[in-house]
Image 1 (cartoon, helix red, strand yellow):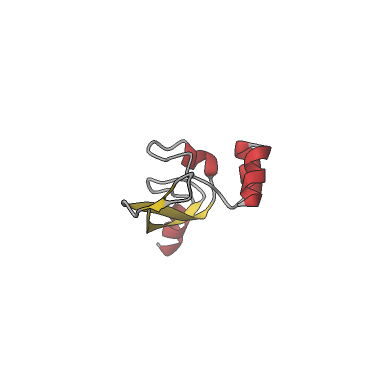
Image 2 (cartoon, rainbow, N blue to C red):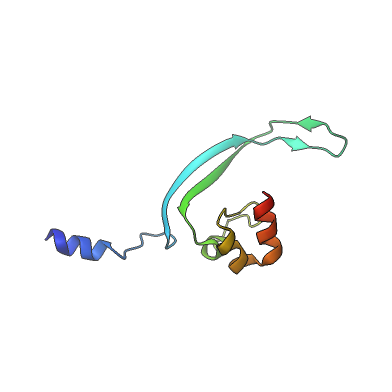
Length: 93
């Protein structure tokens, strides 16, 4: 019975994105930086999802995901998904 369970669970995705093994929720305060050098805030807290594993294309295609704030530290995947300029930006990050 245990072998059957392991076989069935080996390629099962539960309402999620394949290749993401774990997701942790982190929150931080949001500050606003102005062109004159002043800083205001914190206005609100923002939740972040920090993942273990990569599947940038699937994450970006999910509704509700802010593509301007989404990034990957996997430069090869960034290159394949978003192109050379995004990969350059990831390296500089």
